Length: 432
Image 1: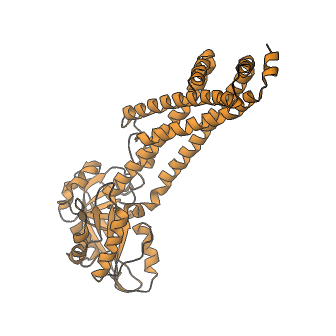
Image 2 (image 1 turned 90 degrees about the horizontal axis):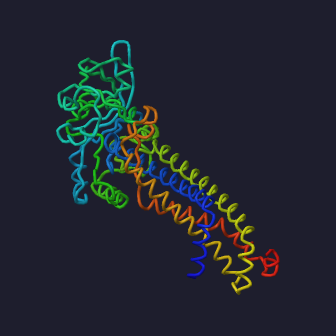
Image 3 (image 1 turned 180 degrees about the horizontal axis):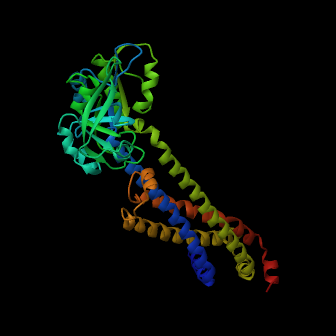
């Protein structure tokens, strides 16, 4: 084995130009694959961060109330009773935040725009406020009654600024319409495709006044437990605890809040029902972003590995013809056919492993150095949920790229190796 390794290493340095070209091609394929996986991981992280800031907790206990079968309101009528059922089973480190949600229209002068509306408790969620990008004004001012923060696209459509008065229109519990004059106290920055999912931000008190909810009501209890929590097990425990407390719990549908309203409105029941959902359910309408990037990464990876295999196959095939004398000599000296196969496969393995490792290391270091430094155009920033290129290299992804590219190099060397092994010592010696 040592002699094969020595011969393989020597052959890699014999034709330096060809070897360097193959090294560059293989390293580039590995680097591109690591870069795409870093981008996919970075976008997934930014998307999760935006979703957990604006529209969802890690787990959510939401409410739907129907006074009549033909009306529906996103509200938990008795929030303290639901909290009493949920809090005893929460793992250590989890916390609950009460949020409101719904749909509303905003009017200013002749202009009117409709969007999803979110509400929060300003005093209890100062950490969440710090994660929201504010273009103008202050989100702290939402603590004042009858105030609103609008997303930048909505403020542009309505042509309002901080300090202007706008009117909120929403449907109350039971189906009646209500209107409330509010002061615009802040304009929030773009939040990717979530901008329209939370275009209107108010305090819980303002939402209760607008929607006619009782003081102890809320729309959803958002459970913040942190990444790595066992959400599936907690989901099952929550459903069981709520049923034991006497609540009716809707079956899991893995859809966002907005996608559930219309189907529930067509169902013939009245009263209070609760729904348990994960952050992935609530952001299911955004899955096309990460799914698309994952598919693109797979396509780029396949193309890169195919280029590596074709390049190495051609190079080794030429090498077999050029080294006929060497193969004949080795065979005449007693080398077995399987050792000849092993020699050429070992050359492919060494070249693939060294080059793909180098490419993965360079791409990972570049990802760390460039993370958060490259500013993106507005449309790309919306798609990636970040104003800068969100690169997030991980060691497992780099190892996977090295393994895949090296495996491609090994597979590409098998046929040329088999051809070399098929040469008989006599025919090879005749070429001397």
